[in-house]
Length: 448
Image 1: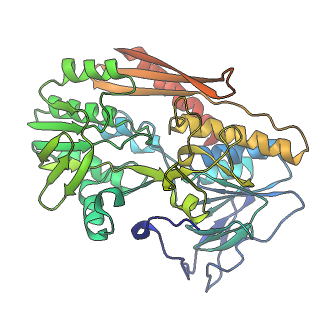
Image 2: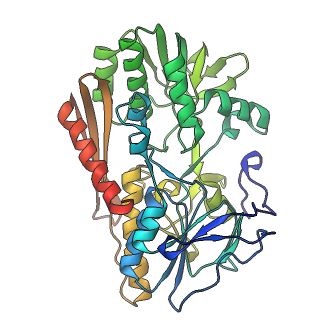
Image 3: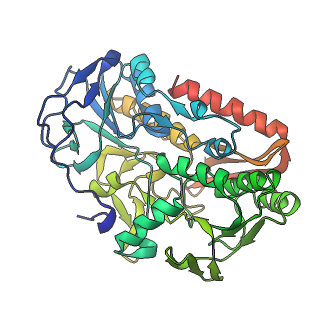
């Protein structure tokens, strides 16, 4: 079995808090009994319909749950989510400079569970036994007929530090990436608003990586804050790519026209070594000292995909870091009872690689997979569908102006998926307004 990188993989938990809450259909909260272990039966079967377990209550998982309830009214749908609230990575860069408030980003997970009638369990996924069709969690085990893995990404710090857990954890605590919904977002916001000056190094994950939050957008909102508040700070973007992408022209114009004295973009700056203690980073484009940093390490599929032994292998036989899956039906290769949706997905086409690892794509594929499972349960032909993607990025805080990118997909004559990218590089307030219309529609679909 392929194992997750050693220093980040969690041990199987043996006990859970004695008053854990399980939220079932209708939102009823039940006190869990004393002495739960990872082998305790978490939820017994409640009906004759299929049981669909969704690991991850984010943009993809909640979309799948909501649309599965419409597809299969008699199914038992269980969402396993470790976070007590929903926190949106889309729009989170704007939150850093108070364009939106915390209440805008955070949503009540109980409301959609009650509205759509699926069960929500707050727990940590600790192991997946595909042979037994069982998910082990910090509050017990649950069996499934279909399993959807929607756990997002993990930060692959071992690419920089190997087995040095201490250096990785020091880096996470002091120079966190704020890419996964947790306390790192608040730490980054506090860092930005409390900074007195100096050089901030920002590394970008090599593609493919989660976006939003766009690292270039993050640099822009930080630079705007420093500019309007007269903070003598510089941002050094260390980009492993040879050029800014996507929306290169739009970001280049923002860097050069709005923040020429603040942002410096360094291409081909693949990280070779990081010394977080002495605040020095070595890259293929040179070595740099810094006063503070936002270190975004490489991304990989979430731990749960590793637990399920579903990580793909490259031509060299080494793990790709992403799910091994059918690119049209989103099922795991060799196990069509398991689906992978959202940011953990593997490559889709040799023409472009991965779908954008965005909330929009995760939401769309959640809907597609819900429809495909419904078709399978009803004995219908399963129809392969394609998503699209749309992202808006704020580059100026006053006036609030954004740029955007759109991706569309079609199957070509070669039978493979082809991608068309449409960049809107001219920053305008209209695109900022469209962003709010877009996210309002998304939240109304699966959260409200």
